[in-house]
Length: 143
Image (cartoon, rainbow, N blue to C red; front, side, top):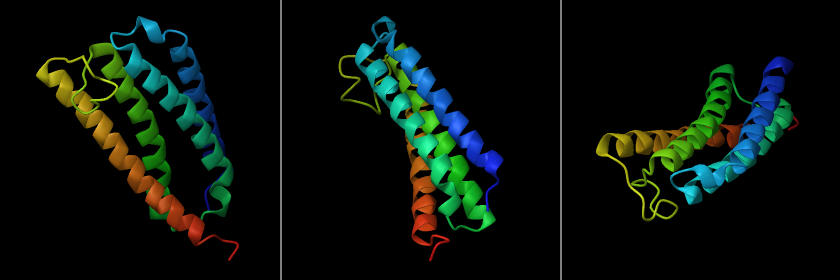
């Protein structure tokens, strides 16, 4: 069973990401790609809210210690990583992996590759974490 301190750290981490999203929302127009900055802002606010909910709900998740750690860290790192990747895209104009919000923008090849790795890697991490989280909810301790 996860400790209350870890659950609390998820809630704090979510609140911090939410605050970062709010602050970013105030300066969206100052980015190279404001449309991507808006996507990053919304991602941070939504992901921060979800992290807080996950922290509260985690006590009913039933996973062994290894899968629990994988799920918790994958979700948290993936959400922060996605926000950072979108923010880097908004700052640099990189758009290869984000063609809709990045339309009309581009960056050098190395920057495009770095942003793509960050966004796609974070998305993969979150998918793994959410898979285990859902499995743990289905196998809930209340059953």
